[in-house]
Image: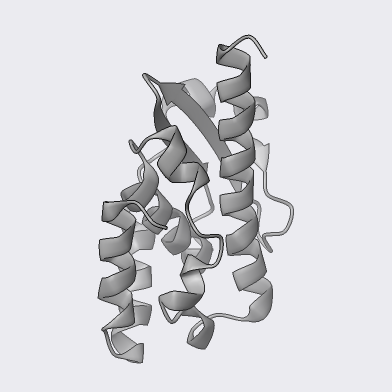
Length: 145
């Protein structure tokens, strides 16, 4: 199950030729929103995704049952930044439930397995896993759990 925006991105990748998918991934890397000042000045509040080959950090906020995503990835890591850009475009602002129901292997259905190494795919899966874990933690905290 995928939220509508993410499903549309997956479909665009799935139906595009291999060469175009790589360019699309690079386009998403360039469209990754910058980290808000509140995180730049408090970088320790971001969670590092150790499975990524480059330093990659994520933060999740919940506002009115909607998930907000924030990423910090170095410019010299376009593959990871591209995946983060896809997650930002496809999951930022969707409901808690939609994030938690997002298929963990959706990147494979995009044809990214033809573009990136298995190690990078593992890092991508870890990013989504961290997002889901933070969503659960923040939801439990807001419910007093």
